[in-house]
Amino acid sequence: MNDIPTMLQISMYILIFLYGIVIGSFLNVVIVRVPRKESIVKVRSHCENCGYQLKWFDLIPIFSYLVLGGKCRKCKTKISAQHLVLEVLNGILYVFTFFIAGFSVPTVLLCLLFSALLALSLIDFKTYEIPVGFQYVIFVLAVCRTILDRANWSEHVIGFFAVSVVLYLMYVISKGAAIGGGDVKLMAVCGLFVGWKLIIFAFLLGCIVGSVVHIIRMKLSGESHVLAMGPYLSIGVFVAALWGNQILTWYLGCLLYTSDAADEL
Image (cartoon, rainbow, N blue to C red):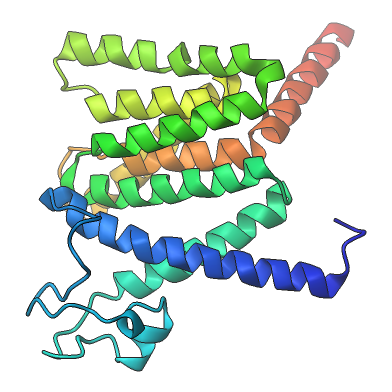
């Protein structure tokens, strides 16, 4: 990266941000239509209130929302701010990912993975269900990632089973009360993507974050005891994919240091 001129870096980050907001705009369609079992391909973009079919200039990410004041061009019904927030968030997410992971094909796959996790997290948070289509998408991304990292292919394959097998047993024994089937599949395909070490770390982190956040939510707002695990498992995968190896190296180093110190005593 140091040999790339600064202006070229800035230009590349701008392009990455634009690419991210375009994908973010598509995610909005997915998040709205998939829970309703509506086609995300065959049906043209339209106002959810009056049915007005949006023109191309109504579909420019961020710009169209701001120009229209967050309202439908025809019926003036207010459009959820989620559309704007998700587009901006996905654009920033892509820039951040490239900044941390560098410019490479695996980073492109990471960005697409994070977009899928972002969309399924919002759907799971609202409906307590992870649509199976997301697992298919992540599985394809994971296969591509495994091919690119074919020297370590066994770690990816083991990752597919490392957490998901345990969760599947919990699912069968509890008849779905302890864990959802979507969570089992999510850990399987994400495990194939990141490998067995990182998926174990991602699962443990997701459980910790989910438990803490949900307890706080129950205390403050009286939320039910039903927990949508998708968002928290996704956070775990996000952290593991970007910083998991560094965190595990640091943790193991601390254990070795503690062990050596104990031996000296």
